[in-house]
Image 1 (spheres, helix red, strand yellow):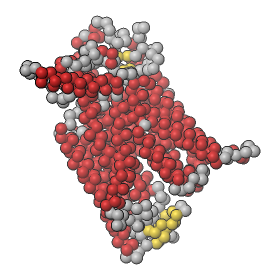
Image 2 (image 1 turned 60 degrees about the horizontal axis):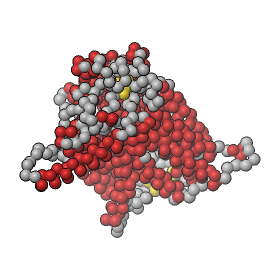
Image 3 (image 1 turned 180 degrees about the vertical axis):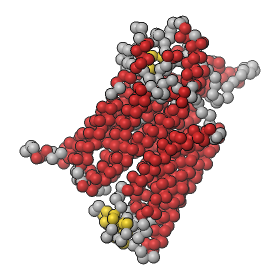
Image 4 (image 1 turned 90 degrees about the vertical axis):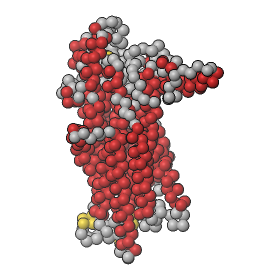
Length: 615
């Protein structure tokens, strides 16, 4: 089928006239495949973001804007449910207070493991747009089931739903919500980035800043809704609002239909990675055996995976092998975010515990305005919302003055701010304990629990929440950007899923192990306790500062030798020109994609061959 190229240029925002092909796959020897055409395509790919011919295309802007709106609204729904789920279990399902948190903890441990599978499915089978839609509808189904549990059906029917049935509905609905997150969690970011990727890496960096801003904006909306539900215990109204917002988000996402830009899934993408690893190991062992049997010394590569390259007797092109090597090199960098996530787990939980044991009144205790419980979480989110756009302008300003702004350096800055935040929290805790030891304390009721609080103002927490928000703005954006840009072209969903997995493992599993370790060392008087008045949280915070300083040292060692991939620039130099998917393609009809190379790896196709990126 011959495509109407004029029509496709009007409907696909990021495929320019210089990179259009008149036939799918580029199998003929027309001018489109000439060196001059490849040079033109390469020039377009290397064009700075501000010179991109598609920067002002209406669909270009509309595509990523609608994805960001969807990200905000689905974040509202998911995060608001997460904030209220323990209260939901105790008030609606009548679980014992000890049982509900344990069940939620099991989900919290498993959920970060799921997006890596969703990203892999998108890369190899379904495509990112389809997986995002599946995740959105699955999340909506789960949210509607949770809403069904709180509807007073006895007002309209003779019988009401039993507690056992409600608990069963809850488990199904809650599971669906997290399966939905597994589908869209690792795909919506790469899907948004794909809409602007052809404008350059700076455009991708800006996109991820606004992507994280939109997720934080969703959190800023979710927190007041969760606080309202917490105070009024009206799950029907709260979950009804969340369901409506999520439906609006799905409608906004689907407005563009097939005009989004997408990468064609490659069914053998992960299998090819495994084959390259296996062939590299096998060929290296075989080469060593041959060298021992023969006196002749042949030129051998330094890296094990290099043995899978054509020039060393392997079956794969240089660039395919280098993608696998680089994917393995990114794993230590992901570990830096894992270490940061350990500390951030305690920032989220223990800062609030500090707030509940400080003076929340503006004026006389018990007789003046009470600061709402959600205030400082909103403040920290506000710091992210304020500084994330500022960073979009700060980085280009620094680069113009000769300072190279890389993702790993930005992660390092974020880790430093996080360490400053935890150090501030430790100083506040030292002061709070000193005031209480001197006899200064008063009871304060929060919900159904009364806490013993110090008269120290809760506004002493402002520095630690400020530095914590700054740390998030640096680390999370840079981490997402790093996972996307450094991942192989056809495994970016998988790479992003690995990043979420590494972060999630740190945020729960390793954090629990750290608690066990510290309490074992301080067994005579445990530093970490559920009731922080009974423990020594000030010392535990200092341990967390040490963890972050170790993270900075580890990050410095990694970043010194890390070489960034710049896959699109390299592919452009080697002649990889974007193509167009036929209109009747069953998976990605109407999308643009990069050239498909999976079928020609063993044959040494020149579609994406190229130079080595290092061992």
